[in-house]
Image: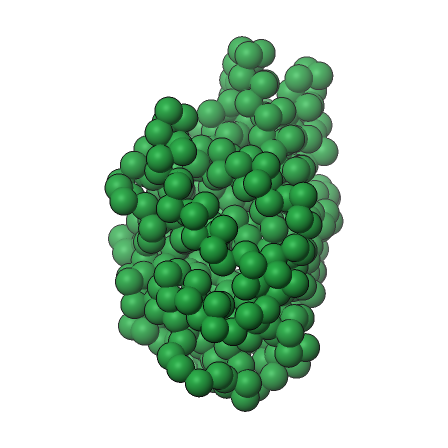
Amino acid sequence: MRRIFSTLLITSALALGTTFSVKAADPNPKDWKAVEAEAKGQTVYFNAWGGSPNINDYIAWAGSVLKERYGVTVEHVKLDDTANAVATVVAEKTAGKDKDGRIDLIWINGENFAAMKRQELLFAPGWADKLPNWQYVDVENKPTITVDFTIPTDGLESPWGGAKMVFFHDTAREKAGKLPNSTSDLVAWAAANKGRFSYPAPPDFIGSSFLKQALTELATEPAKLLQPVNKDEFSEVTAPLFAMLDKLHPNMWRSGRAYPQNYPAMSQLLADGELDIIFAFNPSEASSAIAQNRLPNTVRSFTFSGGTLGNTHFVAVPYNARSKAGALVLANFLISPEAQVRKQNPNFWGDPTVLNVNKLNDAQKAEFAALDLGIATLKPEELGPMLPEPHPSWMVEIEKEWTRRYAAAN
């Protein structure tokens, strides 16, 4: 319910009509030496999901580098829902707090980016494509870097990593029969393997992603999902999704009367032998978990041949951030070859890079080439087609309807 409440709060702020204007004192990424000089001594409050130990460790490592090289302190404010950070910025704007805000950088998703962009809650004009390390970003081959959930990024957020939905199963407990190759197959598999599948309850990001994947596959006119939701057509367009869920839920873990809280909880159920199939938005997640002894080494990945959702995740600077210069220095470091090769290493995280490796020098290319992505990671050519994310307005309505129908069971 937190994301739904936050979304309503964000939407209500539209009526305020507050206009954002660029301040002359704001850091200019075109003058990078001045940005670094201003950043020295600043503390950056980085609001980012805190539910994964390896991601937390990675952020801590990045913070240690910034402290040593640039004199910037990074404080990781651990979130369970990004919408809470967005709601903080909305509340500050409502109160007229247009500077010295509590949040300097947000790890943001498409839904919240769309809301913040619409309300001019982001540091502007576009700064991301002016960062020094932007030269390495793969804008040529990754369209989701410049269009986030159908919304043009316009340099208002900086890419941090790639994502594509994949599924995991434990081969040591593999049942007879084929693995599912679509959402419809998964429903049939769950009926034959009762109690062995589940998904986190929305508005958890991974749980909502499962709903988007299913809707994209099942919708009779998927092109409608790329446009803002038409409430008059909502019931018709989403009818196949909710019909599928009604059929799936009785055969899920705990008969659909409860859901894992988030991805780590779902992953633990796989490790404990309570689930046989789970999923994530990182193709290297299983290998990373195996490397860190969080999953058995018999876990392997699979995907749907018809495609799964894919996107890019970003960091953004609120319009009223106190330490904008420090936030820019952190965002720039996060897309450096050094930070990106460590991030793609499953021993640390295993998150796919947003860089075009062909743009790097020979030594940097060699570092990426030497990465062992792990025994459970599918090769890029095995990941299948990338399905586009629906317009973010769809998930606002879908999460509300899901809550109305199913949340009482949780």
